[in-house]
Image (cartoon, rainbow, N blue to C red; front, side, top):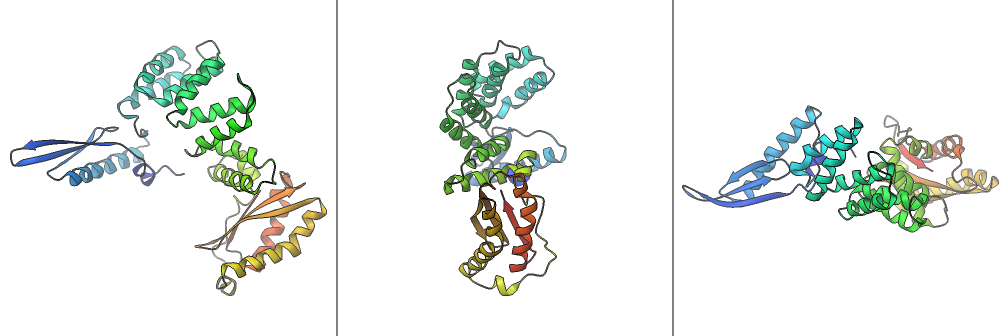
Length: 323
């Protein structure tokens, strides 16, 4: 997801409102605590709106200057946390460790996750998987995506814990809720491994597509169609597009059954139609099955056949994703 002004203004930044008085009566002071940005008015709601207007201006300026913006509830700890990151990247692990140990007293969940990574890797401290897991679990309690992601990796790869794929999937899912790129990719791989469970395939497909659209190179290689946008200059087949959703699906299914599926079945493969979207633009999501699942050619040579076939049935102004 693009981290623009709209993205940040949709985040749940806490705002506190304090009642008070001035020479002509009651007044309210609204404060966005993560930024110390204020708005005052005699009206409660108006005070919040004024503070929000100031926040929009502040975040816009930060984005224009390429400056960092805190997540909700990082607040006054934000710059201290960035100081620790700077020290960590300079391999000044003692400074980073001391700051993050202080930060967790303020319930800074990213500091918890970063301490977990230090103990996981043995950076500035003696490697200790139990301590790393504990810090990740603490961060997970606050919904921290890095904490959840690293817990998933530990359970997936037996790092200091017994292998537990179910726990790995659950922790990956928690990280995916925060749009964690790596979690999307790895959860996609796990859920797409066995393509007999349609619910898993659908979830895995969405995760892999999320990762690919965010630029994860291995996800892009897995997901056919990410680099092949619809031809928006092409004429639209209004006859097809005027038909009902059900009628459109029948034509698409017929084309796949007649021209595409026989080729896949010949190689002990098959194909599942996961989703068809016809508004506002046409998008089709497909998943290979059997011997074709996971095949590198699945996203290359046969993709062109599928795109060409369905472009003739519909038109070239369509998006097709296939994995």
